[in-house]
Structure formats: C-alpha cells, structure tokens
Image 1: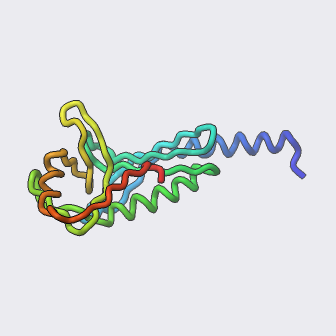
Image 2: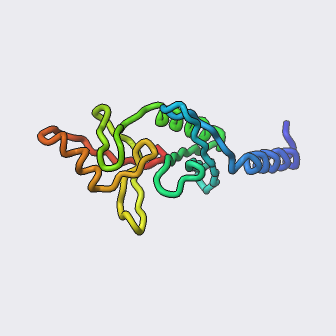
Amino acid sequence: MIKKDERSFSTKASKTQWQDDFPMREEVEHFSGKTRVFIIDCHQGHLGYTLRAREEGVENGGYEFGAYSETSPYSALGQLRVKMRRALATRHISGKAGKHNMLHDRMRGHIEWSQERGVSLVVDGITLGIDELAVILGSYEGWTFDLRIKDSLE
C-alpha cells in the first residue's frame, strides 16, 4: 500500500518529468526527402494536455499540428507524431506560386490570418491566398465538393 507522503512525492516527480521534456525539437521527413524541424510545446489545462507543433524557422506558412490527451502529455505526443508523419508524407499540390495544381481530389492544411494577406490556407507548408485557391478550384468547375473544417486537436 502506498502512503500518502509517497504518493505525493511520485506525483511531483512525474509532473516535473514531463515539464522537463517540453519544449522539444522533432525532425520529420517530408515527402520531398528533406527533413523538417518542429518545436513541440505542451500546456497542461484543467482537463488534460494540449500539444502544439510548429515548423521551426518559418515566418509565414509552414506546417502546424496539435494533439490532446486527457491523461498524459506522452499520449498526446504519440498522436501528434502520427499526424505529423502522415501529413508530411502526402503531397497535395504541385506547381509554383500562382500556378499551383491539386495532385488528387483532396487538399489538407490549416487556415491562417496575417495583416498583409488576410485569410490564407497553408497546404504542404505553402501559403495560398484566397485568389490562388480560386485559380486552383476554377479548373474543377461543375464538380461538387465537401468542405470540412475541424479543430486541429482532432
């Protein structure tokens, strides 16, 4: 049986342990074969642990990911690593600025806002303005679409 004082000590030790592990750097191979570096931060709230990974050294655009666990930051870290590897292994667009094309019937990324560009989408780590998105979608005139926006922690 664990005495109350021993239980308090182990709780403090485990709390300090996860806090010592964050922020951390994580390298993930991109579909291009290059390595992308991420900074992963952890925040403990009343209901669990939230992790955010942001691509290091990228001012505008870049990849961002999030994960959540009610029980452990390491559980959220496992989920986050799966998301990062899966997303970086899939290429959604090709081309150059102003002339991007979708490579298949799905495009994934995140929405961001900046003072100079307003609302934009970041796909494959590339920032696409709304006008650029309209050019990409214009080639699919007459097709149907299914727009889904979800929390980055899902």
